[in-house]
Each structure stands twice: as structure tokens, then as C-alpha cells.
Length: 476
Ligand SMILES: Cc1cc2nc3c(=O)[nH]c(=O)nc-3n(C[C@H](O)[C@H](O)[C@H](O)COP(=O)(O)OP(=O)(O)OC[C@H]3O[C@@H](n4cnc5c(N)ncnc54)[C@H](O)[C@@H]3O)c2cc1C
Image (cartoon, rainbow, N blue to C red; front, side, top):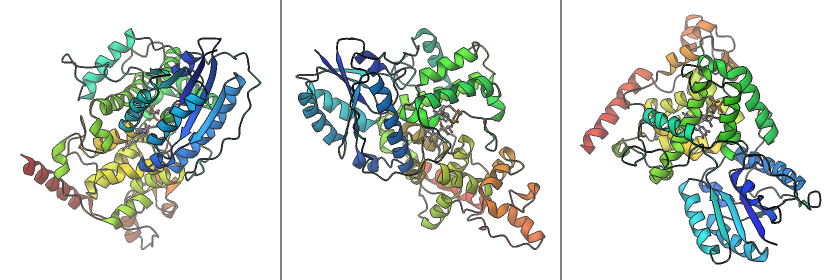
């Protein structure tokens, strides 16, 4: 009997999992599954303890789902990727593995690990690698010169036209195998990594994720364009934590969207198309890190921006992290992140701009801090978001585009509902004054237990423009 091994990584689901599906195609094969925890590597990648917990809990759920189908999940802990390759080679020998199935990851360390692995086991194991975590594989959407697009809009155009030609059907979960019900389930030891409570906002399991997707596409997606920028409204899908660790696939998202909104591709001014557009941004950033692996090493896409003389301002950085900058919308957002591990996209843009363009602090500090907190931490999307906000990335906001944190708050949280939910010190401040609470406090002789702004926006704006211009001149 042949033995097929499925190595689960960022694809913790049994439905629409290409590697798992392929491994199970031969009904005679003995199929086993594996997950390897690599805490040292995770530390280097700044993985949030919350995300580690999210993975751990999904692993438990995956173990059950696999066992019901007669597939045992093996679990091992190594320090890092290099150790995992050595260990896997021995494991394949011990279990007499004939074929290894895995879904590709696109970050540079992960790609190097897979190259090393295939080499290490090549004599006795056939490796099958699948493009699974994207709608279209990196390198498949290119310009006439066969290069990756640097600008999003033409990328999207080419992407959507390729998408209509491609097979993006979701695959079913594999059927139960002969030994279903006979698999011994070993207790999964918690990772040797800090684990933090994930709260109540994100239920565990594929089914929970699929239900959330279904109800979002049925009930909310039509209003997406109107609501997506309002942090006080539950107007986005909140599916990012599931997509980041592969509890849900982008094909499942696309197919559910098409089922609920069959005209999604024709009605380009509708909410459904607007949501699809965000899924394409996710693809864009992943395609970019493959075309320019330097992005995985925290290098800017636009090289001259490395000449910007960032401020060394540890106290300001800490105030930003703690949500104590004196700018209500920034503080509410950072407190939401610290408390839940998730932050609304508009707010991610605002706080990124504030750190880089108001405090003139290196964007890498923000990128790192986000990863250490986010439940949906994802190198490509996070790096893409930070390099967009910092004006260091491809197709980023131009460096002279600087959000005013007060007017951003007024625009997107007019009545301060979101602010009041996260900054209780401002509970008594009336709606119209919520974005400049100290002005109100002064006028009404009130004492606020809330920090004064750490920096004056108008002055900061000038300093930042000067710093970027000087950096640009130095590189000319
Ligand atoms: C500074 C910064 C850092 C970010 N870091 C991350 C991160 O680590 N992980 C992450 O998944 N997203 C990140 N994003 C993108 C975006 O903010 C989140 O994906 C989104 O807020 C998740 O909420 P949602 O699931 O409700 O999104 P929805 O609006 O419902 O969008 C659906 C899905 O599309 C994808 N998506 C949406 N917007 C973007 C985007 N701008 N770029 C890439 N993919 C997108 C996500 O997978 C999301 O779940 C970042 C954005 C910024 C500006």
C-alpha cells in the first residue's frame, strides 16, 4: 500500500484544500497528515501570541475533522524551518512515505524551506506542491513583457480577465476512508510559544468561518461600499483571521460571492465588486512578494525612501502602541488592536499614516508591532499595507499625502461612536467636540484624564515633507 503524507501549514481546513484532496484521490492509499510547529521561526516572524492560539485551536478542530475521515494527524515541534526539514526527512523514512502533498507558501523563508525539503527527500518521496492560497498563482498575471505589475489597477484588470478563464471551483472535503473511526487521536501539546486568549469575536472552526462568509455575502455585501470605511459599523466581513491561516480559502469566498451575487463581475459599482476588489488586493500583495522577495526582508520597494532620517522617539512610539497619543481616532484604533487583535482597515491606514507621517517613526516599527498583535497577521498584506501608508511601496500613497488624524476621525467616525467605545476617558465629551476633546475641556473648564496630543499635526506635516524631500534629493 502506498503512503501519502499531507503536510498542513497555512491551510488548516479540510474543505477546498488542494493538497489534501489530491492525497486522498487514490482510495487505496494510506493517508496521514502532519503539522510542525516552529516556535523559534515564529518568534523571528513576530507571530502574535493570539494568532498562535488561533492556530492551535484550529489544529484541534482539524484533528477531529481528519480523524472522522480516517486520517491521523501527527504533530511535531521543531525550533525552526531548517530543523523541520531534517526532522521531516526522518519522519518520511520511518512512516515509509511514498508521496508528500503540500500547499505552497510564498514568503521567502517558507519557499527556501520547501526547496530544501524537496531536495532532502527527493530519493524516496515524490513531492506534490499546490497553489492553493490564492485565486491565481504568483507569476500568472503579468504585463506584456512578462513582468509583475507594479500598479494595482492594471493588475486587477488583467487579473479579472484571467480569473474568468481559470478553474476556481472549490473542492469538497475528502470522503471518509476505510479506517474512519479507528484513528487514535493523540493529545496535541500546546506550542512552546506564548499563547494569548483570542476573545469571543472569532469562533473556531471551518464551519463557523463558512457561516460568517455566507451571512456576509447574503446580508451585508451589497452595502459594503457605503459601510466599509465606518469603524463603528460592522460593515466588513471580518474574515481576515480565517484567510490568514487558511481556515477559509479565497476560492470559497469567490464562489460564495458569485452564488449570492451572480452579477458581481458585471456590476462594477456594486458592493459585491467592491469586496472582490479587496480579495484582489490580497492577491496583489502576495504576487508582489514573490516578484520582489526583498519585500519579505522588510526592505522598501522604493529604495530612496531608505534615506529618510526617521526620528528615534521611543516615548512617542510607546504612546502610539498604547493608544495614548492624544488623537482620539488613533488611540481608539490602537486600543481595539491591543484588546482584540483585529483592527478595521480604515483605522489601519490612519494609524500607519500617523506613526510614519506624524511621528516620523520608521514604518518597520509599525509593521513589526502589528504582526506581534494581529490575529490576521499576514506578511504580504501587512507589509503591503505599511509600505502603502509609508509611501515606500509600489503603487503606494505619494509621500506628500498625509492624513490629518482629526479630519479622518471627523469623516469616518463623525459622532465618535467608535472612539467612545474604546476611549472611556472621553465619555462626557459631546459629539461635536469628540475629535478635539482638549479644546472642549479648556472652554468648559473641565479636566480630562486623557493625554494631550503628542505632536502638533501641522508642524509634523511640514517636518515629514521636508524629511522625505531631503531623502529624495540625497538619492538624486
Ligand atoms: C497598515 C496595514 C496593515 C495590514 N495588515 C494586514 C494583515 O496583517 N493581514 C491581513 O489580512 N490584512 C492586513 N491589512 C489589510 C486589511 O486591513 C485587512 O485585511 C482587513 O481590515 C480585514 O478585515 P475584513 O476581513 O473585514 O476585510 P474585508 O473588507 O471584508 O475584506 C475581505 C478580505 O480581503 C482581504 N483584504 C481586505 N483589504 C485588504 C488589503 N488592503 N490588503 C490585502 N488584503 C486585503 C482580507 O483577506 C480580508 O479578509 C492591513 C492593512 C493596512 C493598511
